[in-house]
Image (cartoon, rainbow over all chains, first blue to last red):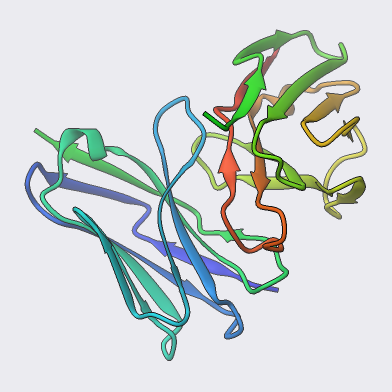
Length: 111
Length: 115
């Protein structure tokens, strides 16, 4: 089955700096890669996703890049703000299979 | 707005006392999932329904059961909660016709404390 590893487990940045979270996956047939943001006491919320037919996707201050050859994908947050502080989860799946989640990254943005 | 709603938000139950958590959705998604999440760890899948078909994960304890009386509602029953079952329980749904690999929508979760 699929295995997703996520790094780092914690990340602390100054407000305004960029943050990068990386995930690797094991199943070369995986073709869907979502990122979820989970704020304290809430359920995960989908913030961006990418499919294997594109290499990069951007939505305002967040972007995701995918390297199919190396089997890794990354979340990039620019101009971080205190409200970006949360736990972020990556996930991967192939068509017809359920999502496999990474272990999560706790992002702390210091004012 | 279409959404996934979990009730209650917080639940305290005594050791061994049965408890039921509920999830409802207005998205008309045909797949519903129950996850257990401890201490900001990754969510751990307990089981899911694809329409009326129930699918249990191999390592889900027998103590955990689920019911889906209709498309909109799904329940998690813990027959005899132990202290180790203290966790956040998340319900999620996924879109019809898209298989499993698309658009999970999560509820806000129920934080269960077993005392």
